[in-house]
Length: 223
Image (cartoon, rainbow, N blue to C red):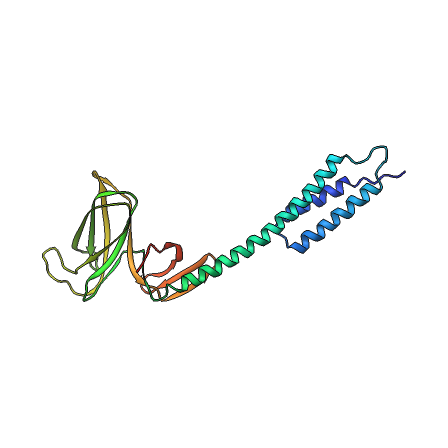
């Protein structure tokens, strides 16, 4: 009786399935059909005195089912990610028109003063805000005392160290934070009003006039 050596072909199909886990379900089904055809042919033409080992057959069937199962899982994950993306879009769109704290050191001064924030990497026993004008000249300093790690907002009345009211306009600030004399890491946060929602390849971004595009996940606080 003739014998067909198809184990190599069967293994090649399994290898192709493994290399194409991200293929569509129809492709996985097509390869699965090819695998079953080869397997049936192998069983029909095997040497009756040397039949296929049951363990080998079970292993091959388990592999094809595993690969098809992973393909189905990928399809399910794509649907879940799509739903999450839609949900995130709705959540992000609700932020249009709201004020948020995001990375930046701008401190616009108006009739009612100015507001900004900061983020401390660790607790600090002394936090100072250094305010400068558009030319980088220091015009005021605000002491926030001891602060816990996290996001903190602060207000500035627009006065210099002598109590004189400064002209409205654009100012900048920097943060100096220490704990027992050692520097504590910090990030300056500016306040901006969200004007639009932009969808990019990396996710959603918020357009903030004067600041630019800010990642949705970079927003530290919403007012």
